[in-house]
Length: 468
Image (cartoon, rainbow, N blue to C red; front, side, top):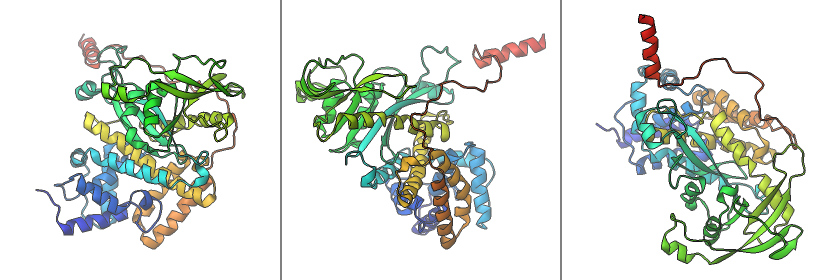
């Protein structure tokens, strides 16, 4: 029987305010206010049967689980139990079954909605000094995430063909759109690693609603085809990408804007199979684009020369040097993905079913945006860009202060929050221009044989050897 009476709902809202470090304290409340979570739960139709693991408690436990260095369910249940005992309430059972069932009952759209709203709020609150040439830039990049080798996960996200059955892991491709100014994750798409319409460009087309007229999309050459640029231009969105590997720039042709800087006309290729006839007919037959040659002067970079393609054709408003600087900033997407996958541990997801994998993926993005919100607030106080602060340092500070914030009253929580911002502000990224590091590891891994056959077969052979 569901429990959704107004009195119960009011009590849960008060619980939520305590769980997210007091609504009166800025920071988490700015990006994830209690009334927003309540509205999302109501509109997504969240219901519950358990007296302890209500949607709000489950959401909080799931969020702290993905933000914890030990992301197991037992640790999440232990945190809930400790919180209940600290509040003088009846403790829950230390088993993980009820919590896992409560996670499964959370609507799949709930973490996706909260993560998107949190990221969009942070993006809109970016200060003018953080923008590029007064424009809001959204940088897109793709990556992959692995997950447990279960039949359901293999069916939804098959492992690469190069891996033998029973030896690989399901693999999903993800494309994430980040705010260049704040680092917030604005939207994402998750799909199969292989097959038709599973490339990064195809996934990014699913995220067209994340872009508004006047935005600038920044990406690598995966997003540099005629149709990608034409579709962005039709939405009023400018693009800055690297020239696709299938094209060659001839700076002897076109309208010259400067040295190795010109405007050329691209002709519309034949219709690809993913594009419907109506959309194909609506696109222009030709597209005027600007090509700028960029020379990478600092030593240590693998790429020495590249060509940037953009629909920003005004050389006075957008000089070639500014475009080169912007494209170099595209590397921030790689760093943001590293923060998600390595620092937050999203590289290998833990859930056993595709639906729970998607929930876990979006909960990581929500936790990531919460950390970015704390960093943006600290940057405002310090008068510096948010990217001058360390994401790993901010995460460590939030983990350290989190439990104390949960136990504190409103006055004490406000004081703790001020100290939290002070600690986050102390962890600034070092001024290391053009830092170069070899892409190699010094510490050797432990020696051990690789699994070259399905685990069941290897286990049976071991048991056979013991009997012999």
